[in-house]
Length: 193
Image (cartoon, rainbow, N blue to C red):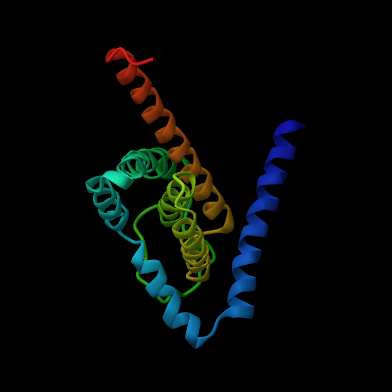
């Protein structure tokens, strides 16, 4: 009985996922968004933008800790999202599964979780948790735009976006924990209590 319920639940989630994307296409698709969404999505295509931000933050003494957490969280997020989850889940992209024409180049990677979402969530979370609230809030606004663009372009399902958010938050939490353990060990090693 339990496997049947699980399969039924997964089927319902997949139907919901597809329904959200089709609703976006049928109700929000327009020339303006067709022009803007690929640009927003492209900004985050290469994680290099977040790595550059981390390195610039590390160079400045005032933002060094946040930059270190960002760099560590980005590495962790790539391990979680791209190296572990994407191949393990092996979810086909929505445009292939739903046979929908797309306005951007197709991806050779699997769909779950969204790497764009993971990266932008890492950036926003580090800024907010490091006390850079104004920048963090603006990054949250940008993150929502990126997440929407990935669905608008049929590159990701809503649950891929949710998975990316969770992977990003988990990566940041782990990075903060690792840095805290390192700092405690370092202070104890120097006789500081």
